[in-house]
Amino acid sequence: MPALSQIIAVLEEAYPPGLAESWDAVGLVCGDPAEDVDRVLVCVDPVEATVDEAVELGAGLIVAHHPLLLRGVHGVPADTAKGRLVHRMIRAGIALYCAHTNADAANPGVSDALAEAIGLRVLGSLDDQSGIGRIGELPEPEAFAIFVQRVADALPETEPGVLGAGDPDRPIRTVAVSGGAGDGYLAAATAAGADAYVTADLRHHPASEHLEAGGPALVGVTHWASEWPWCEQASGVLRRAFTGNVDSHVSTRRTDPWTIRTARERTE
Image 1: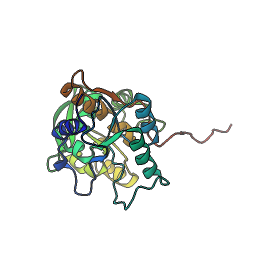
Image 2: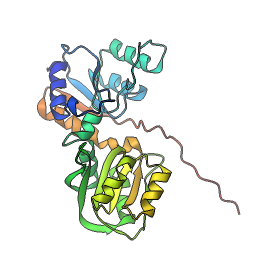
Image 3: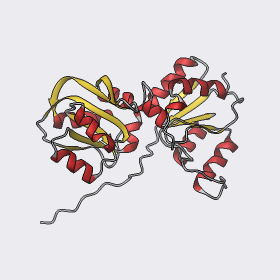
Image 4: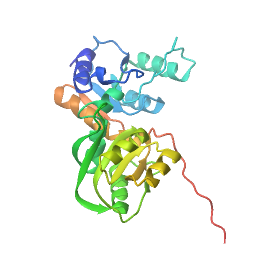
């Protein structure tokens, strides 16, 4: 059974902390590096639901994509939401390790997992300076409406679903993807010659202006759904490194914050 420090070493080889943005908070949040770990839960969000899941599994480590304590804190009292989670994990003997923008920029990383889920052959990075995002190619061109359905079928279901912006008949072959909030890379997707761009958290004005300028068609998914495929990638890293010694699980809890979808009722 490996020590937590050994598991961290494997994670940091796959997702080097030096790749993280300067504002980010990655690494070990709580846990004793000397403690042995034989069961791991990999998730997108370190929240109540995934801590519940880790407790039920008997996991000794949660590997999360999103940081729990992104902004500086002066304490973690148990009467605050995040402090309560920290105290609960410590009491349960569960360590928490976060790999965020370092997992975004790693190769392979978050966007490679998204591209693979969609069925793309990765050709390169969307943004060479940061390593964020990927450019990929479909085996054969397909209409945009069919491609949007492909994305919906590839990712976990969410209440907001998947949105497409563009001509339904537009042929799609070259695709840009960026897990997480990606409208900062709209220009990069255009410059790369993408036919479509798949990302999360698209805002009205940047998306509208991008389409008016003739940029790639857009596929909008939820932030959580776009990053969830990374969980299997990270879990696979641990399974391969600790074959037979570490039981690594991918979280099945949907932690997307949107829980209701509705529309205006039609009147006769």
